[in-house]
Image (cartoon, rainbow, N blue to C red; front, side, top):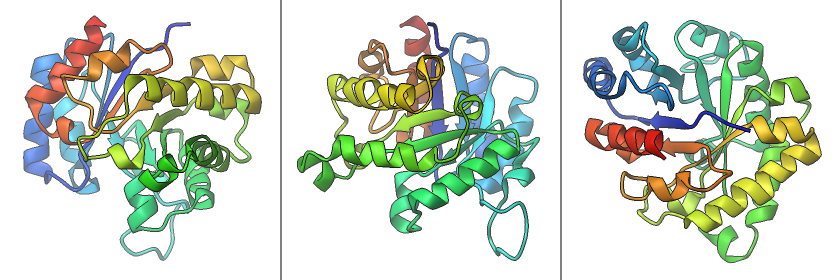
Length: 254
């Protein structure tokens, strides 16, 4: 079954509105005609409108980096999923940096996922093990727990709408990417099989599973050759027009 690949750029805490709009327009000029790869730009909250405006009417899509589980209320500094409706199509949830620095739990990721689905947006759920867990041979255990936790009480119909990103914590921003064989094993033999067990073969086969962790124009082709890897959640390489658009072009030609 054919799954449209995704190149999702997580800009993290970089680029205010003016600079974000410039990068978005530059990317649009370079790869705005590519329709075989879904391009998702995920700027900080303050730059969402500027990026949305810069790519309006194009094939590019916008994603947020987080959302609160409640629709509104006394949560200073937070942004709810309903507030993002009309600004974004996707929302990144459970990124390892939020799990580490904001102490997000699997239960909190699950609550946010339900809120994002309720708002009609598409969650990009991040899972992945730490270096210590990897070295202890706990990758399968950790990834399974995180996927099951994120999808608790999620119906098969809703599960079919989401995207999952395998991002081993030790590979994010370190320059130490997981090998394509290792990434394929986790995406295919752990996550996709788990989806089949939790739901059915259709959900497992249609769900797009991304790899993230030190991807770049030089190694993206090797990941895209893997049958169970459907794209990448990109960090540093997404902050430069040349590297991001090169990855889109490589993926389009894969």
